[in-house]
Every structure is written in structure tokens, then in C-alpha cells.
Image (tube, rainbow over all chains, first blue to last red; front, side, top):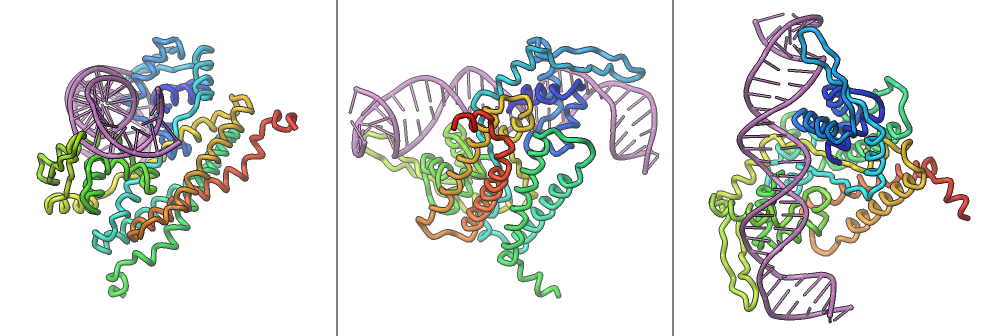
Length: 176
Length: 176
DNA sequence: GTTTGCATGTAAACGGTTACATGATTGG
DNA sequence: CCAATCATGTAACCGTTTACATGCAAAC
């Protein structure tokens, strides 16, 4: 999913500035499945405007750059839906962690156990974040995405905790 | 994880040609967590050779391009291990599927149920592939990666199957 | 007084994919 | 006869990230 499509999608839920779109990516649990930076969002919105898929109105502000509030146009909405009707690109889970674990026999045991522990901590934080996002009513899609995220992080966590003893560094025992 | 590091990692397990490295990515369950194309592998191997991290020997073949068999050098091995000791980039799960599901209220029900079914089929195929790869003895890392993959696909599958009825298209019933 | 939040944008660099070029062999 | 396997490589293109530029206000 390219940034253009993602921006269109967010705009189907209501008007927003580039800045707000970025914030939505980083919060609300979206960040587990999609991402984008300012450097790609602003150019994407400009291009969408040129193509007539979104419209802009500038809201003047004191002592700040104008807020440029984007709205999706009917053409944009059609284009967005059309892109979801086409065959979707496959999911990809790129995991430096799993890659590194493939070579755990080459690493010092302390490094391996700290990698595992770090990943566990990360997954727990992600899970907690997904659980606490009860702020506002959710669309069916948001509930689905939330549940999916929770299911996966929970499974990862359970697996990692079951494996953890195997990769425990000897020093951990000696330190007691 | 960039392609250079991935190539180094594979070469720690034994010598290989660019072609064989690519094949390893696509099979053996590695493909669930890393990926690379010829267009990036060959240049990466050339650069690694220039930097002295790998060495090449050409094996002449009849009526085919020479096989260029790469071996990791001691310097390459050190560099590889050093890269695994540095803080790892975070995992990223990019999911066009979950993104599309966020907007399931905008899509025709038939499309939604076919997306879900498609994803279920895909996950089942992935799971089956991970289960059947009993061909050769595995390193502890490979066993870990395998188990991790299975745990995640299994969780995704269970969740999807539990949600499926919610997204069932009315036509499915009418068709009976 | 420094960091965070608001707010937009550009340019260079990066890493990667896709498509192309070449070509024999084997299996369906 | 066509597709797949083996085998390497280049070039154009693509989307994105990173770093930079600007600047005020509020919170800590």
C-alpha cells in the first residue's frame, strides 16, 4: 500500500491536514500495519490534489504556516475503493529479530537472551497499547485490526516466553 | 536488514552462488521474514567482494555462465557478527490486508468475505509449508524461526476463522 | 532554557524492484 | 513447443527515508 492510497483512506474518515494524517499513522494502532513519514505524505497530498482526488482549503493561522486541510473528492473516493477491489499486494513481515535469531549459535549467549527479552518487552508494550485504545467508538474495521494485532502479539509473546529458557545466558544463573 | 547482511548470513552456513542465495530466500521458510531479488543480490555480492568481506572463485561450466561461488572471509564473518550485536531495526509487519479491512464498511460484502477467505487460504498454505520442512537437520535458530512462524500463522488463522462469520456475504447464503 | 507540539515543505541519498538481455538444458 | 531451471548481470525507475530549513508557543 503506497502512501497515496493510505492518505486517501484516512481522508474517507474525515478531513485532515498532512500533520494530522501523520499523527494517525503513529497512534491509534495503525502503526502496526502501515507507516509513512512527512517526506512522503506532503508530496503525496500535492500529487493527489493535482489529480483531483482530494481538495484543499487553506486555513490561515497566526504566526504559523497555514493549515492545509484536505478533503477527499468523489473521484478520490471512487479511486480509493477501486484500489481496494484490485488484488492486494501480499503482506510482508520483515523481521530483523528472527533473522538474527537464525544465527544465534554464532552469538554470545548474553546477546541472544537480551534480544529475546527486548523483543518480549516490545511485544508487551504493543499489546498494552492495543488494549488501552478504548478512547472512541470504533468502526468494524478498526475493531478487526485491533483484534488481529492483539492475536498476533499475544501468540508471539506466548511462543517467546516458552522458548526463553532455551536461550537463557549462563551468566544469568551465575549472577544469583 | 539489508541484502548485504542477509547474504553474509547465508554464507556463514556455507559457500553459495548468487543464484543459490536467492533460492534459499524463496524456500526453507526464510521468505516469511526476509526477501531479496536478483537485482539486489548480485550487486551486493560484488560490493562485498570489493570490500573483502567475501571471496569468489569462478567455476567454469559448459554452455552456461561461470558459476561464481562465494565464500565468507574472516573479515566478513566479523562484520556480520558485529552487525548482529548492534541494536536491531524494529520488525515491521506491512499488511495491505489489514489496511483494506479497516475500510470494510465501504466495500461490497462479497469483496470483504473473499479477502478474508483469500487470506485464510494463504495463511494455511504458509503453515503447511512450515510444517512440512523436515527435510534436513536444523540449527537451533532455524527451529526457532520455524516455530515462531507457525505460532504467528496459527494465531492469525484462529482469529480470522473466528471473525469470518461477521464478514460473511449475504450472497453466500442465498446461493445455497 | 530546553524540549515538545504545531505546521509545511524540499533535496539528496538510499535501497530496492522490475524489466531486460543472453542462452543452453530438461521435463511436461 | 513451451515452461521451468540454471546462471549472471545491467539500467531505469520508484517510493521512501533522512536531513535540513523555518519558526512560534506552551510546557516542563
